[in-house]
Length: 253
Length: 245
Image (cartoon, rainbow over all chains, first blue to last red; front, side, top):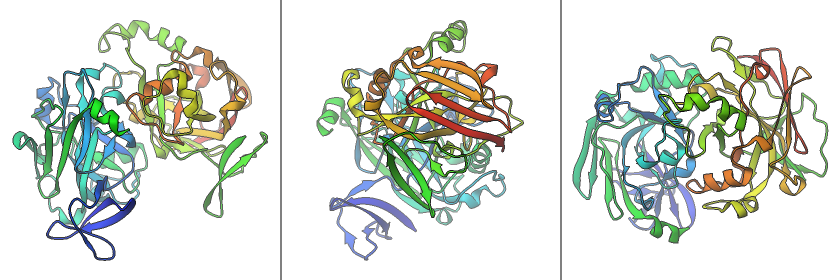
């Protein structure tokens, strides 16, 4: 089953997605494309893995970490499918990061690796934009790099955990304006999903809706206003996002 | 006006009071809001000075150019009198006395001169943390353990606090005064912090900013069995027992 949240006639609705990829309301109405706005399909804490693919670590001249390198994002950065992300003026390098997002399904504290998959509620696609210009050698990566308004598209929908047979063998792909730029597979995760859930739940209590962005493989590229960026995780969804300029963004706030 | 939240028959109830009042340790006061909590790290003059040399060496190379932020996740948030639960096998645990800035309305790209218009008021925060040997990596392990962010007991309206950048902050452990600081030790003022964060993150009503904690000295260490109280002049007193996790 696939579930989503949308804005329809100024109301937030919980909906499902049918086999034709159409949005169906709880009353059973099928909504036409364009008649609603996609919202992030979940809300909760947002954990993001840095350098969790060995090839990406090499790309950044890093050795793969010995323990998960986790940072946090704040909810202000989240936007849904088919929305705009702004690129600040006068920056040299803003890049996407296509990621499988694991969504927690039930409260988890001190969970073992063996039991960890029982705590996964579902999966979705995340795009973890970063403004590299703002990276400082402190609390890497800082919120100015990663937690900016509009910088985390997620969705379009949540796929139930039981519908993804092997989350550790899914292709990830990113296209800019239709051209393939990034390709990887979740089998290359340095720390797999059970490891991440066990690690985090040893530190703190995880609750339903919490999201773990599992990291991105190699293949980063700069994005510019006008670019349409499509991030895709095999079987989980295709997340589309458009880059706009800061001045266009400022007109909307 | 004092704004606080309480649990009554499993419902969260928001309340106000015209005057400060004594709170018993068995009261069920919740954190004053349910918003995001953002901390400003390294925002204390003595703390920055103590790290000056390290920050000019690897892996830092140079001191930070902009305020360094971190997040206290929702599992850390507790109210007045709730227990801070600490592990006993992860090294020393420290209280982190700080002024909490409570946001009153949605703030995007706010100038420092206007930023207090977006602030509802102030609260007391105890930004509890494990010792951190490095400021180089994200602080999830040290700062995001369950119960590591007591806040409260209330939000006091900003109109009742005339000089937020000059407030005495006292920390008591087991009723003994162990530490004193003042918001005049902040490197970036209350107004500058709100303005800086809002320059790229929209702050929402109910979000709380931890203005800055002092250097962690042995006096601020807390252990199971202790009771820790933070008193901010004119804002309130936040008391929490400490117990083993």
